[in-house]
Image (cartoon, rainbow, N blue to C red; front, side, top):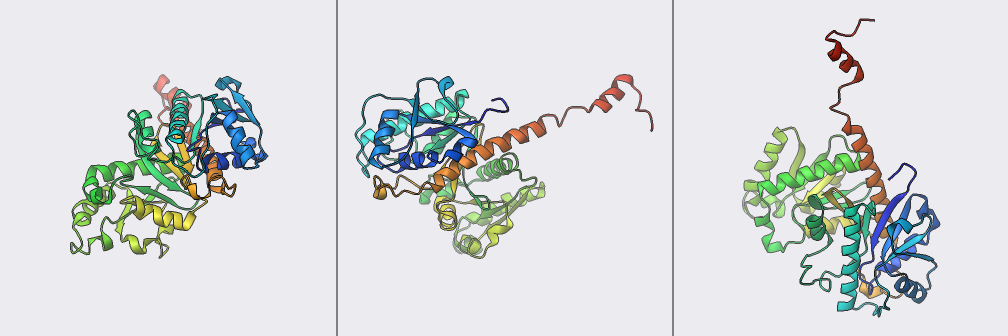
Length: 360
């Protein structure tokens, strides 16, 4: 991408029976969105036009069949299908799952190939998207397979970032999934993301305990004493600013989270319940640790309000903003660090001549 080209934001449309298409259309109905990005929606202009009309929304779509035809200042729609699709608002149908999967898979392919710069995913239904060749609990797991790096779900706002040691894992399996190797890998993934994607020079990270009250010295389980605490001690001895484990029940209510650049929760609900309580509608789900950038809103398909035209696009808009900001921040970081090991011209001259530089 040249300097003057806007960031190309690819968008997978999600479940057509949910609020995904609505929040996408509402987001790009705002003209100012085109000031810093060029959207490319993976769907069908015909289907989106039908949804727009059904919900009395204002938008114009530019249908394309090749990425080179995408235009700035337009809502580009990369047409993946031509046939009409029956929309059944609020219903989890197999048809909606098929089109959600088609959109997501094609958008991921475009991300891998560099046809888009970042990917923002509208919400899917994890049940109706399952197929023989797509048996993944969600977006993150599929992206982890298709892209390079160690994927980690990271919920973000400007002031709060919460990652997970385990994500879509049954609660009964959480403790056995958390090993010293997993802790080290997740901490390092988060540490690197904070540096390159958010500009934090020396990240300070807090970990929450696995058991209530961090196990109360073994009374409520010994996972924290045997696994978490020794691993964190070793990491601190190596100079990493990793603290905890902290009792999860009071960590957020006390405001202690404000003392850290990011928090790692042991499992899904332990991290996402407080995050969404503090940030719902403004939060963004970011897949950290990969070589490509993907974000999504912090809500699901919201079937209960689908088709009513009342969905709030705030979180989806934040997901677009975040994807673009992270893309630019990562480029800046790569520029700054790529020449770190190169010898300065002055030193190079001295080494070529075999003499120290002349004194001034």
